[in-house]
Image 1 (cartoon, rainbow, N blue to C red):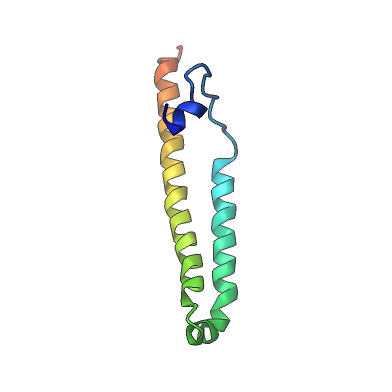
Image 2: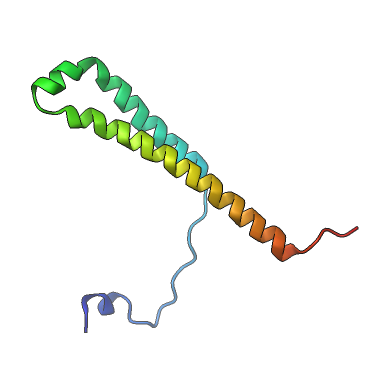
Length: 93
């Protein structure tokens, strides 16, 4: 019996994925990373002198990846909407 077999014994059905305000959640995350990045910029010299420049660039990377995630969420939402329209069939005249 493997490690995962203890947790997934095959008798339980997986729950439905949670849907929520995905776009809003991603935007808030981007905002937080961006605020942290901007708040640390005035102290760049201190971070550099102490070897902690990566703190600043981690925040920049978080905001950048968040923008990529926002693009992905928009593409996903459009694909879900397109599939729903396909399943509904042509509009009644």
